[in-house]
Image 1: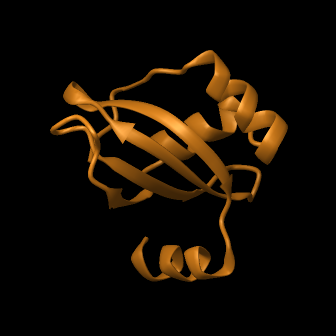
Image 2 (image 1 turned 180 degrees about the vertical axis):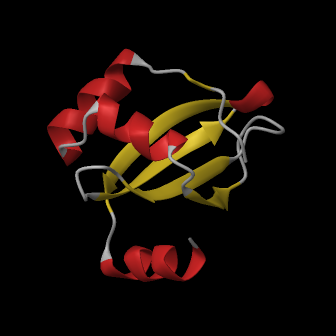
Image 3 (image 1 turned 90 degrees about the horizontal axis):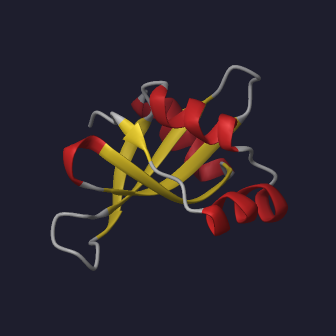
Length: 95
């Protein structure tokens, strides 16, 4: 999956930092750094499913960014957090 653009909603940006301690820059780095991507759920809109991007970013942090994959390679992030142990194992096996 190729992400060509990232669209942010203001309320999501606030949630990333306040609830999970993930900055926009960190989430963007995870999305564009050739992450391991897996489909999580069918979207409400046809062709716009929810995916998880798992990546280790430059500062060594392991992140999972959940996003809606819009048409034409656009990602709409909806949540992000540090990977749990199971996700880190999945990432290690699939990168």
